[in-house]
Image (cartoon, rainbow, N blue to C red; front, top):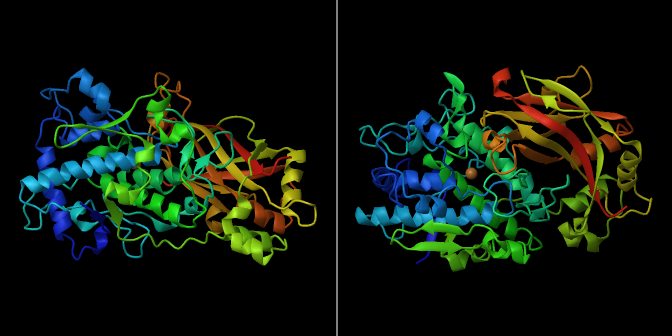
Length: 513
Ligand SMILES: [Cu+2]
C-alpha cells in the first residue's frame, strides 16, 4: 500500500475527509487507557514523559494505571533531540503513529489508505493553525473535538495560534552537510554525531529552525502562569497535542526536500548513523504497532521513502542552493562557469573549525533587550578577513557561526531573536539584515536539570552568520576588537525563568589553516 501525505490546508475544506477521519481516529486513541500501547497518551509518552508536568497539565490522574516498567523501558522517553538521529527517529515515530491512527479509522469504517496530513506553515496564507484544530467543536457544532487543545497558547499567549513568518526560516536547507560538528562550526542540516540522545546539547540546523521555534511559538505558555508551558512547548508534553504530528510531517517532508535539492545533498553513510544507537551499545528505536507486534528500526531503514510506502504531495521548496557561486562573486572572487555549475560542491570539505572570539562570561537573559559583546581574537579575525579577500591565495571563504552555548532555564516557551553587529544606540528592529536568527528553548528545562543525561549543561544553538560577516567585511566594518550581540526576547523574560547563556562565541569554519 502506498500512502500520500497531503498539505492540510489544501484538502478542499476545513473538515475535509482526511482531517475528519484524523479527528475520529485521535478520539478513539484518546479513549484508550494510558497503559494500552495504542493509547493516545502512551504514544505521547514515547516522545517524553514527566509525571508532575502531566499532572499539572491535566493529562495524568491518580486513577491512571501506568504501563509495566518493562513496557515503559522499552517504549517511553525515546525522542531524539540534539542528535543526528533527530530526523530518522521522528520518521519512524510518525510512521508507527500513522499506522495506529489508521487502524482506529479502519475500525470505525474509514478509508484503509488514510495518511497523515502535514502543516506547511511557510506557504502563503497557510501560517495559521488549520481551523479544525482551532475549534472546540466538531463540524456539526457539538463540543469535544479531539483535535482541540486548550494548552496551545500561540506566539502572543492569547490562544491565537499561528507561525510568524518573519521569525522562521529554511536556511538549513542550504547546508551542504547532513552531519554537523559539535565544536562550534555548522551543526549540519541533520545534527551532530551522538549516541542515543533523549535530550542532547547541540541542536542541528533543521531542528533549531523551524522545528524548535514552531514548537515554542505554537505551544506558548499559560498567560495566567508563564512558568507553565503549552503542550507543544515542552518535549515531555509535545506528543500530546494533535498538531504535533502535522508539524513533524512537515519537518519530515523538509528532510526529503533537502535530500533532493541538489543531488549533492547526501544522508550520512557512517555505519554508526546507519545502524542507529543499538549498533554501538545504545538503546534501540522501538514502536508498538497496531497489530500488537513491536517494530524495531534503524536510520538505514528510514532513508528510502518509496520503500517505506509513502510520499508527500510537494517537494517544491525553491531554495537558492547554488548560493556559493553568488557569494563568491559578491565578495569579488572570479568564478568560472565550471565552478558555477558545481554549485554547492565548492563549499564542501571546510572542516577546520577555530574560535574567533567569545563573551567574557555568562549572559543572563532577563527583560526585553539584552546587550553584550563578543571579544574577537585579532589573529583569527584577520584569518577570516583574509579568506574573504580575493587574490590572497584562498579559494574558499570561511563560513562563520555564532554559538549560544549552554543555554539554561526553566521555561521552554522562551524565545528570542539574536542580532549581531547592531551599532551602539541603534534599535535592532531597524536592522533586519543583522538578524542572525530566532531561537526557542524547546527542551531547556530538561537539559538544565543536573540529574538528566548531561548533568544540566543546557542547550547549545548554532546560528550561521556568514552573510552578516560578509556584509561587515564588504562595508569595511569587520576590522574591530569586538562585535555587539543583542538578544531580543519575544516576550519579556522574568527573573524566575532563570534563563542564561553560558557563553556566546563566534567560530570560523574553513579550509585548514
Ligand atoms: Cu518536535
